[in-house]
Length: 204
Image 1 (cartoon, helix red, strand yellow):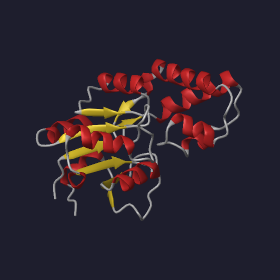
Image 2: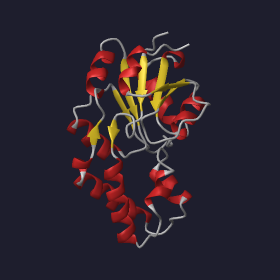
Image 3: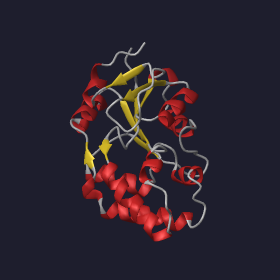
């Protein structure tokens, strides 16, 4: 069954941004004298930044840490690449479907990245007041309501457990991007090994 709305996570699904993250994390750790390895931060990819910091027990200078991270990230946008065939696939999907992005990244950087890589969708949702980060379903439900689409006609493509649980809580189909940053789990019923595969996916 073909869906009417395709929602995508950004990092690890549409773009490859790991090197950018490493540089930004190291810079903020040095600035704020934080001794938490990137590998520990990596395990939390998919959740909101404040939530991740709290989980890592980084309580001091959170705003300074995040502002520097975002500033460093923007300076190193050349370290971000779009995955193969993403724009080609999105253009094909857009002919008959609505498209959206649901990401835990802040809106400012998200917009800049989409413009830089010419990624065009109908709606973009980032965490903000009254819209909790994944694994909560708030952002997904916001997109569904805004675009006036039924849950049964919606699918979310993500690469972490936080994406999965957000989709599950929203009661929509989930597809795991096996090429992204998360580890595959057998509870993920649907998966793709590259972005092209979403075109031929049949949902039951």
